[in-house]
Every structure is written in structure tokens, then in C-alpha cells.
Amino acid sequence: MNSKNTFYALTCISYCLIIGAGINEHIALWPVAFSEPPQSLIMFQGNYALNPALFWSLIHPVTIILFLITLVLNWKTERRKYILIPMVTYMILIGITFIYFVPELKSIIGTPYSETVDLDLQQRGSLWIKLSLARLTFIAITSFILLLGLTKSEKI
Image 1 (cartoon, one colour):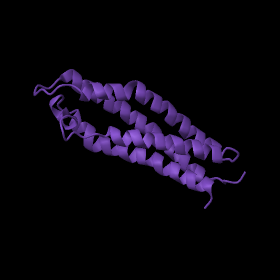
Image 2 (cartoon, rainbow, N blue to C red):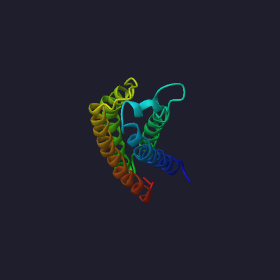
Image 3 (tube, rainbow, N blue to C red):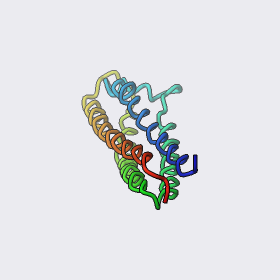
């Protein structure tokens, strides 16, 4: 196995980890967190709060670096477009994430505890989930493109 294939495979694994983590959050975390806010947001507060941001703050830079290395190594091959399409999509989605998703999520989960359900907060959470699922769908679709590139020759 040469470095082109090794880095390409690592990029695929890293990108697919994002999909798995996103699916897990959308099945196990967000429906509960946004079910009866702000009371249901207690899981993000206090000494034993969940901190999914730790995973995301590590996986995104690693994935971006792997994409860049893989692109450079495969620039003169027919794999280039199979790397560029998901990479550009991912970079756009990362930009949107930092412009909308992260600030909105911080705003929602930072709401002080109350036992009264805040319907506005619940609607914001619902919208956040829908838009996040759309974002995850783009990543899933482009992961197939990235994986398809593995079937192309690494030769120049």
C-alpha cells in the first residue's frame, strides 16, 4: 500500500466517522435534549455535563488535514475530482457550521434551567435538528463520491 492509498483510506475513515457521530447524535442526543427545553437541556450543564464539542473540535481539523494531504498526493490522478467534490462541500458546511450551527446550539443549550417548557426554544431546537440533518445528508452523499474515488487508479 502506498502513501496515496493510505492517506485516501484515512480520509475516508475520518469523513465516515463524522457521519457515524452525526447519526448517533441525531438518534440518541438531540431528540432528548430538545424535547422539553430548557429542563431537558440539563444534560449540558453542571459538573457532569455532556461535551460533544470535544469530539467535533478534534475530528474536523484532522479531517481537513487528511483531505488536504490526500488531495495533494492525488492531484495528478483521476481521483482528484472524487476528493475535491466532498472536500469543497465539507469546507462549505464547516463554514456554515461556524456561522449558524455552533452559535445557535450554544445559545440554546446555554439557556438557564427552568421546569417550564419554552415553546420558542423547542421550535428553535426542532429547526436546528432539521437543518443539521440536511447538513449530515450532504456529508453522507459526498462520502459516496469520496469512496468511489478509491476505485480509480492512483497512478499519474
